[in-house]
Image (tube, rainbow, N blue to C red; front, side):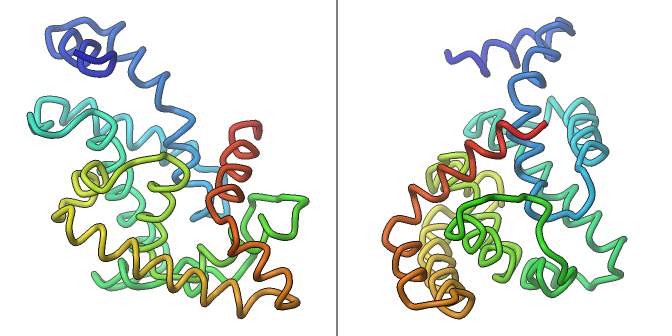
Length: 203
């Protein structure tokens, strides 16, 4: 049994400290999940996510895990927030953050390639942005992402390919020169890791 499973097991049996330890482990990743999708600091939405987890802790499927459940809740909190803020329809999953809020991301980086990647991610449909960020920033596999978004793993793999293609297209359009686009495209994994590290350092 892994650490998350042990803490969840204890929490469900009334150990509140175990629940607190779970939330401390995941506060930073959940904050990172919201960071490239919102202009304002995401503290309120992180707290909302954790509160919903408290209410629904006994609903976690046996074939899932706490991390997937947590990010699934975070995604629902995000879409609820965006619908309320922008008065958007149920099709919000196919709308990009860039379409909702054309302003720049609050994630600031010195490297041009990192800036391009953040901007390109915001320009693709929200669902695909989430899938790519879970893959590159949270290092989730297709099965874990499938639990987050409640869709088959095969569908996730297809959307990963689709999202990657749209991301590459967006990078080519946004880059000041073909050389910069090529440099970013040549190692998206490395640039994603740089962004992840930078976000972890941001207070």
